[in-house]
Amino acid sequence: MVQLTLLGGIALHRGGELVDGRPAQRHHVAILAVLAASPGGHASREKLIGLLWPEHDSAKARHRLSVALHVLRQGLGEDCLMTSGDTVTLDLSCVASDVGDFQNAVQAGRLEEAVGHYRGHFLDGFYLKDAIEFEPWVDGERSRLKGLYCSALERLAEEAEQAADLRAAVVWWGRRAAEDPYSSSVVMKLMRALAAGGDVAAAVRQARTYATLVEGELGVPANPEVMELADELVREGRSAERAPAVPMPSAVVEAPAAEPPAAEPTHRPAPEVARSHRSRRLRQRRGGDLSTARSLAGWAALAVLVTLVIAVILGIRLTAGSDTATDPTSVDAETLPYLGP
Image (cartoon, rainbow, N blue to C red; front, side, top):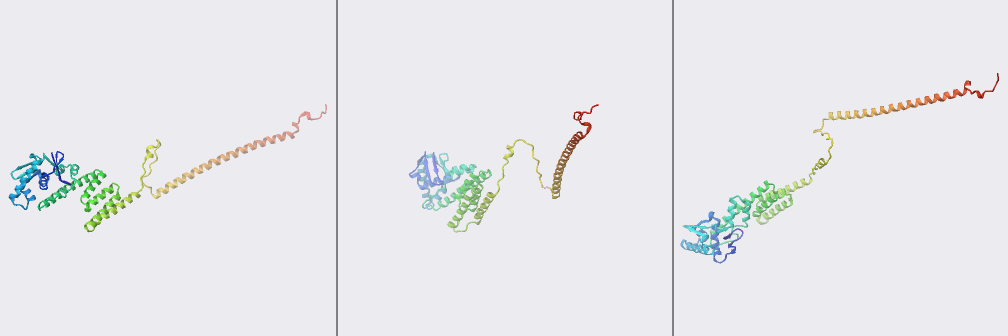
């Protein structure tokens, strides 16, 4: 099996071993790149000649293409390349490429798998001498593939936000911003994701980094909306810190069973009703105090009456004793003198 790497670097392996020599020469790798990026791995001879040997006459250019295809078959296997009339086809069952895997995963909606295949720009740093048509084609394919990659990242970030997976949303928006650090709209989405995850400071740093890049490298004013968003996120963060905490009703769960408390009124009574309630409570308190006073006065009067009765009884007894001592008829006979008959 041949593995062709074209994203983030260029490499050609067969059976796990690096292929070098003539099959790995630039024009040969360029043929494989054109076929791998084309739908179904097909490309016409005219397209390959126009991209790789534009300054040669038709006969010479066709000869060069035939020689290049022969070298590739010898180095990779006879079944890796097929020709039919004017069409050259890369047998995808024999040659796997990261470009093909990436595009297939995007089309199937396997976005995480797709972005895993994208490890850098298409044919990054690769060039061909005397092939003036090849470089524009590479730029177009590079932009197209990058667009697919960025769209996949945005969809992943949006899906993470909808699922409230803030950590994943920050990761996807961060990778998206790395692809286009000069985009104010992308950096603002990353800032919002960071702030939603509680990292307002990182959101502010992203805003400052964006302003430095745009003003320092591009020499144009940064979008003021970015710094305005940073200020807004800081204010919202401070407001959240000042907000009072809501007590949790844990005591209600742990309290023993008891008589349910009287329900609080859902609204305050009118002033007239409130004054009426206060007057009623005051009269009730005064009535209770008066009843208590009357009860105490009754007990005091009874005590005085009992005291007077006791005093009268004692006085009667004392008076009776005094009268007995002075009455002659009450004198003992033994105390009289004997007079005789």
